[in-house]
Image (cartoon, rainbow, N blue to C red):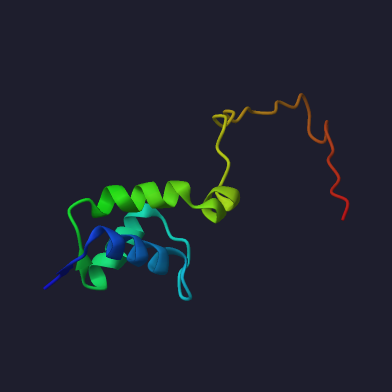
Length: 90
């Protein structure tokens, strides 16, 4: 059985589970699932979780940057063996 939370309670639950003492700054889907497993629910839970994660400063600072599509791989052709050498310097 799930406890239906009010708007103020929902905000506090989002804050505590996402970034509280045991919060791990998880994504929106995981955050909503964790809230449900904790025994809480409200009608706009999934939308609120997505909005909260998008507005989290730490999540935005440390998120992966995907601005441009990856370049397709290209084959390197060699006319004879050992035509091209590479050196890794550590």
